[in-house]
Length: 192
Image 1 (cartoon, helix red, strand yellow):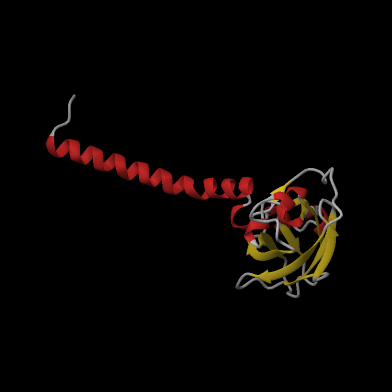
Image 2: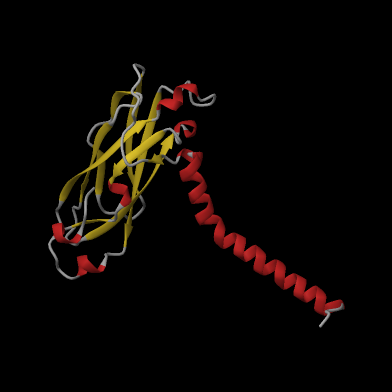
């Protein structure tokens, strides 16, 4: 069957709407993937182990913490900055405290500035990979293990970076089922 005139226009219009809707739906996961792979927008890289190369050159790593609107926790870095050699594995801690009388679940989003350094700041292990549930009055230390890829020193855009800041923002999320069943905090969560 061949479409003509108004039927052809309507079919073409519907096809365009479906195509644009599909692209809009796919844009968020595609952008997330793109940022993780390239480091665009300050998105850190991920690795399973530390670097094989450690340079004599050092870099300062700053740590920042914030809370999304309505998140009732207190959240801060245990230290404001550290100096490490490029390629050396670093370990930093953030502290979270739930001052409320109810369990609160949260998840952290993160970024790295300057953006040019995002693809070179490599996280090995991080509390941000898991949702966190804090019981009333509970205080925890949450680690992040990382290194700065030695390739940063030869990158045209990032070679002049002398300070990188790792920022986390905690957002409140719905309590997972395990937290609602009354299990102990250690049974209901996993800190990396």
